[in-house]
Length: 373
Image 1 (cartoon, one colour):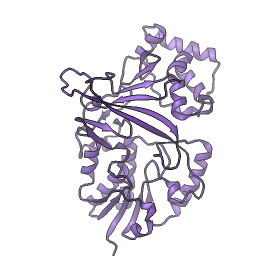
Image 2 (tube, rainbow, N blue to C red):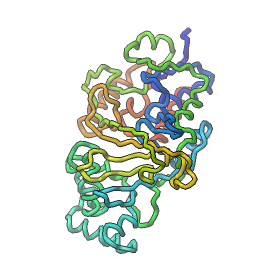
Image 3 (spheres, rainbow, N blue to C red):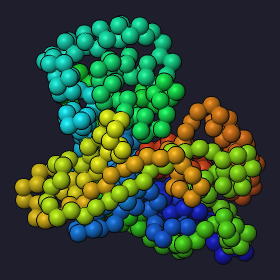
Image 4 (cartoon, rainbow, N blue to C red):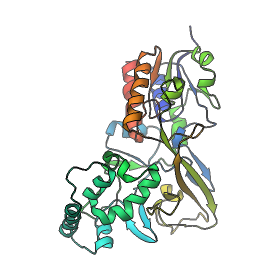
């Protein structure tokens, strides 16, 4: 008899969800994580009374009622609405692209005028079937908005010219002929009161958790402890990079505690020009305490600048580069994973895909139902 039913590698959202479901089914679970904390990339920690998102802004949003009700078992969510601002050389624009954006850019005041201007610029560009991100963006919002609010930000984010990036990357971009500033078109949205770490800790109640434990460095001994393994780490690392490494974009964060109550007046400001080296500044207090500084008695604030970079060995992998070459390489790893007995692969790194948080939880719930019955 093994000591545990499941060894779960990774204490992020996929691992925590699967662990909770397994424990609720009467299974004994060991969770290991190579980091010094639980919650993976949604990890938050308090600084000067502010919950700081250490691995970038995480705003939960979903239309999946099952996932929303599931997570509400472990946290109370606030009413935060994501309404980022774009800064282009000091000019401020609304994100998502909406009537405020179009009015500032072109002076138009009606949806019909905005639609006509976008159509005029699309026609002038002569784009019928967009072949890359640049053409897709121009066809969606016109050349003016593309040049000021899309091009520089996107090229910093991905480290490649927009003409070399696939069109699908920007198809998620919200464009609205209304004054709606809510970036996410989701029925449910918010951030856990008290931070994500507290939520994940509640999900993991009853599990044994070993931190600072690298599964890949001691795979044989750790695997021997459990009947089955749930692996949420990088799939290429699991197989020793035998088909070559999968490529990612990495992000570096510079976080500061400032002796002022309000730095930028918004949770997220995107810097869309090419010259500014960071892509955005996050002011963490506005995630949990609201946007109006009146009545906020916290005298300090915490900001994080985000600097995208090429991923190198040892960096945290953030965004998979799902081009043809990487997708082909991943399919080879997926075939190896499918043939691996006693191991379940799940989550954004094991599946080499960009997942929103609700998609991670939904995927873990599906996998748990499949294997736990």
